[in-house]
Image (cartoon, rainbow, N blue to C red; front, side):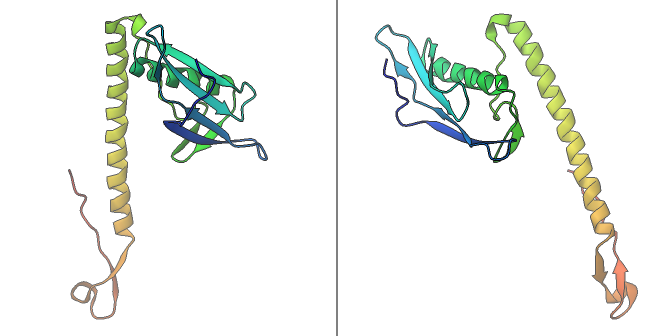
Length: 164
């Protein structure tokens, strides 16, 4: 096993909530097949006290890569530092939570359905809020309409919401 990441297949720069603190960078290497037949995937989180390269094993390249995300997420969360990056903030660097298959297929499906239902509910609520905001914004937009308010006068125009 080489003690290097090689050319990273993915990187993410994370800023910490501590001012003056160095930027933390997650680097994930390409999965490699070992002589034993197992696959390893290296990752490194530069800027954290733990430091160093970690190698994660899997039965194939995909499992090694997925488990690398799981391991990197755990290291970031255990640092108890809050990070921000383009597109988000949190304690996990934006790495997805993986539901372990060892808990059983029915359990995994139950969790997936619960998450999907919650996402659908929040998405629908967000769409409703967006429509309401558009209506409120439209209510406050002055418009020059000679036929409604007369020449040169400003009138408030109410737009009806679009239901999609």
